[in-house]
Length: 373
Image (cartoon, rainbow, N blue to C red; front, side):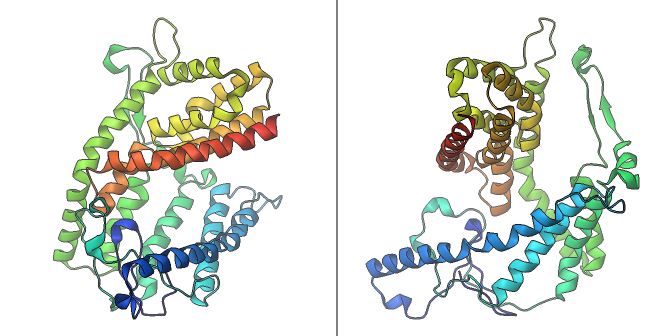
């Protein structure tokens, strides 16, 4: 892809998250030459683009540090992480507009009629290359800025909003008559409620949307979310059963913990090479790196203690595994398929992402073994 000048818009295959840019004279090349050019330029493009994260990373490190200043001590780490992201985004936009690390050559997926059938879904690819702004950049970015602001304000304990929102609960006590099996939903503290739904409603006024536009937007949203919502309800129920299986009269371990222990017993001191896959298993089941750590971090710590290995390295491998598990996480794949119009293709996508997941885990395992031994 190439840098876009101000006011220029290039729209391509939305399903792949890419932009198609037609290069003058491309039609005259034969297919073999076109493939060679795409592969060569694609490699150069990746080389150039790989330098961009170097610029956007430092703000997370600088703003993510907790200083001793008493005025900043109570703000919370989330505030600094949000600021780091915004600064990184600003650096990225500034550098891209000025052509820094932007490949000179363009790259595309070729003619639409030659695409693999699995690339497209209910959202058709478009060759539209013109863009006419309907509002100012300030109004366009305002909802996102409000979302970020509300997320920060509602996650800082010292402000009191976090405790107040979390106090509104929908509780389920002694589910199915089993004592100790309880759950609750902090319905106002859920990000889907505040800020996302709240800001979605506010955006109607911020963007001066007409009644028909509002109706179309909400109708389209509900239509696209119908299928994944059913799948997510089933997935969340499965996660709850897995987590709640540890509450039983026999004193047995929960199902995920029993699976992990069985695997650990088979591997012994080779555990550092496989620890990340347990984190990946947790993310696959729960859809969250955080919940994966909640499920398995203590187990990883105990495993390191029993095998006399570095506890910090093993738990770090667990956290990395939870991150890489998002590649094959059912929740994420279902949600993304709904957004790009590929509902029903979840199995095919997980089959493709499994191999990068496996390779990622091998690399993490090699590093973990090197650090432990």
